[in-house]
Length: 217
Image (cartoon, rainbow, N blue to C red; front, top):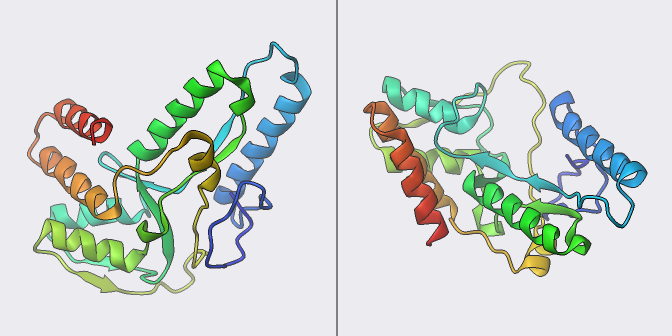
């Protein structure tokens, strides 16, 4: 969502919105549309509270999209193949899907009681969990076992940013929020979920288990 300057610190909510590619820029456009509607039609005292939240790179069980590193890992694991990594040194703010989901619910509940809390918030991991694509694949290989990583660049590959990170200080300061699962626990949970899926097991049960574990962490 932010204009990428390839700097090594996290982007804050007041940084310029300007995603490089159409996919990224569609997020920027969504933010701007929301801002304009809020200013134009929801600025009365009795108007609903409106916030937007900007998550990091969300990963977790049940994601099978193309051209995403964790789903690529899952597909490779299922076939017993090596994992091909295009950009092993690209850094991303990886976080388990339950992190932003629970943060969104927290924001919505809080602004329902106090409209002054409605704003724009980053929901990202701490610096220690912003890792390279190569590192996260290595973590997956170690947790899953029996597969390895192969780095292989693609000719004429689409543009990818090298370094992305979010500054979630505003969310922490406003709500006392902190991330729950570090990246190693996130990878463990992804492997746990997919082992159940591979075995045609009870997916609702493993989802309930992980949600309860997250809430009670």
